[in-house]
Image (tube, rainbow, N blue to C red; front, side, top):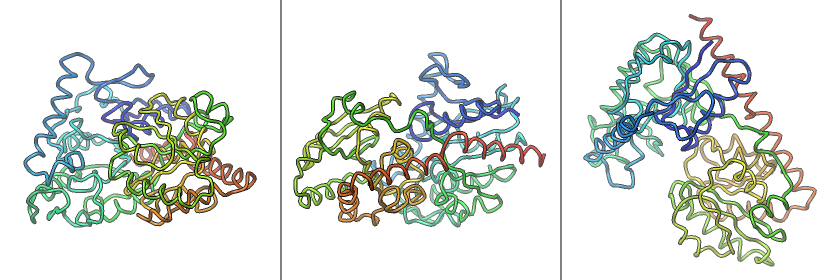
Length: 424
């Protein structure tokens, strides 16, 4: 059995991390698996890149730019520029040797100039089973990556008020929807949501009505992300060993979708509630907007952007809790990683997060957009006795081992591949 995974990036974003982990895990259990990406950022076994020459890399960047320029005349404003993909530029892999030799094609996140919708259609016409792990809503919408409260994707899109400058019945979202419907018409496609929340939304889409949508979570390396000595982790990162540390992580700390404003409000409430707030400090890693951190009421330690997985694991182990105030999430790798390290998580009850955090058993689920309840969750974890905290931390680790360990998830996908080949 030969499987080829397709993802735009090798290392950037949660989808790239998940695709890479699954690719490695499948090879470890005996499935011949290769990850094909636009451009390689590091040498890695079983990962192949399309753009290896200087010219090919420039062409890949040009496709990305062309995709953004194509959307520019339609965008509502610049805040939504990267939240909608018309998928008009991309590569044609019909005659790629890896694709030709594959028994199964496995799509992940393929936007930003990797695949156009017509390029996807050419894959579908190869009459090979196609598994599509959805890391956001784009595969079954008229172009948006997260629809928010809009449910027009359940029909034929159109009237795209959240993202388009001139919404109407036959607007760009409806046109993209129709192009996708045509592309999927000949597909032997199995869409997979990496959370039940996303799978349920996909099942309601008019585009995916002909297909059976499954739910298989993203995998995690539980040997890399595992509990270690908290004092040693803090010393390695140059952090105080006599403080309670609250961890916050985001690709960009000011991203509205990451709920930084709610986190900020919750911290101010927590500061007022604690008897000795100086015992609590913040640990933050992410990119950009460091100036915002000066407005936080607690002393903070800013690690900046982290790419080394071992160092990220140290950061999770150094913290007493991980707080994720995201307003729209599928199945965040960050929660999975923190819990695998035995660090309880606090997050809003949104998207796939309730599938990950068991309320007051392995962490705390706060009411959506309630800074007050987010603060209550942090306060609850800080107030636990050492024994009760240890029980919560153990439950967090066990949930990850049972549901998200690489071998567990790879086994589920291997079973799916075998059933698809059996049908052929």
